[in-house]
Image (cartoon, rainbow, N blue to C red; front, side, top):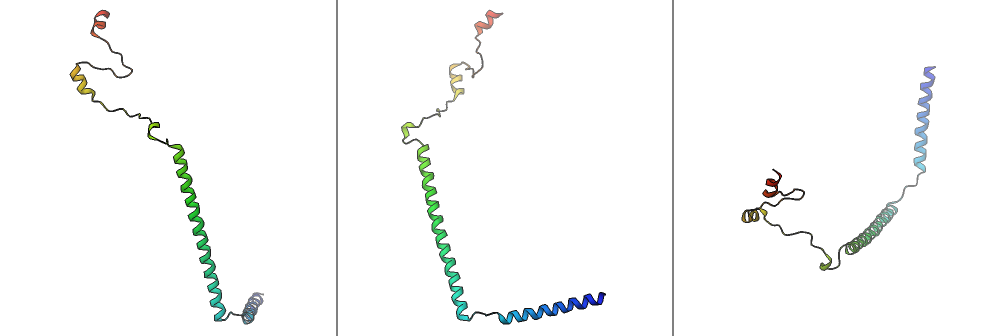
Length: 121
């Protein structure tokens, strides 16, 4: 039984190879002239597609930049007078404290004079 299976597989392989050879004989291979024209057509179509994609990319990128610039113009104030200066000039408090002889309290701290301390005692 094992010999029958092995011989059957070999016969199928031989038959398959014969069929492949027969099919390859039926194939009509293009001539060199046809091959050159087909390759030229493929390269031309690829180059045209590249050009179209490049143009569309350039157009969409330009539209995107224009749109972003328009949005920036609408968000930002039109002239300098509308801009509000929120930064105050920095002052050196240590020199003022030394010159005045007084300690200024920061926000949230209470200042207590010496008279109030004496009155509480």
